[in-house]
Image (cartoon, rainbow, N blue to C red):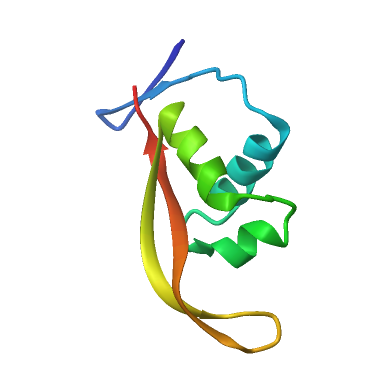
Length: 95
């Protein structure tokens, strides 16, 4: 499905996609969408009931998600420093 809008000589075309997601995948996508301009770490996903964040992100990528992954040094809830923690940003979906 496509939605089109023309205003001030600018065309905006939005394509709608429908995917079947597992419950944990749906939670992860919702978190990534609500934090579009922020990275979410493995810890952020884990505290939101995503048991295996890397596997969940991999499955979402297989379903067409464009997710940027970088490794960072992150502090946990107890302020302990952890190096090489994956941080994710949703950049869109393959068409």
